[in-house]
Image (cartoon, rainbow, N blue to C red; front, side):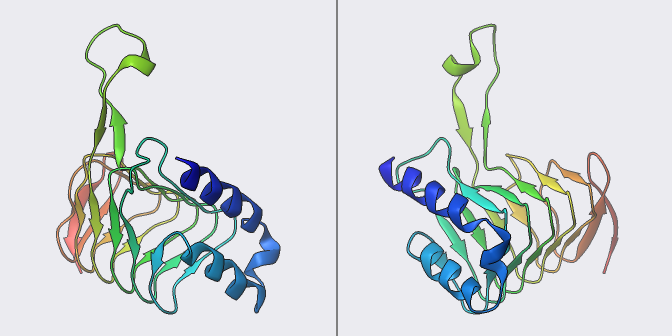
Length: 172
C-alpha cells in the first residue's frame, strides 16, 4: 500500500506539462520505470495517472515498446493490465479493471470488488475520451476504439468499434 501511495505522489509531481519537454521527459520516464515495467520508446504524457485504487498486492501493469499514452488519461490497473507494443491511447481515455458489485442495499463501501484483467493487443488505437469498463478482458490486435466510445465487452482483432455502448462497425 505504501508503494502505491509513493507512486501516486511521484506521478502527480511528474504530471505537470513541464515534464513533457525534451530531455526532462526522459527523467519522468526514468522515475515511472521504477514502479512499472515499460518498454523502449514508450511515453506517458502530462496529467495522465496510472492507479491501482483497490489492489495493493502487486497488481500487474506492463507497457510494451512504442506505446503512446497521451495527456489526461486515467488508467486503473487494479485487476491487471498488459499493453502490448505499438498501442496508442488518445487523450482523456479512461481504462478501469475493477468494479464494485452492487447486489443489495448495503453501503457501497461494504460491497465486494470485482477485478478483471485486461490485455490490449499490438497496434490497437483507443480514441480520445473512450472508456473501457471493467469486465472487458481483451482489446484485439489492430483494433480501433472510436472517440468517446464506451467499451463494455471484448473487441476482436482489427475490429473498429464506436458508440455507447461500443458496437462493431467494420474490420480494418
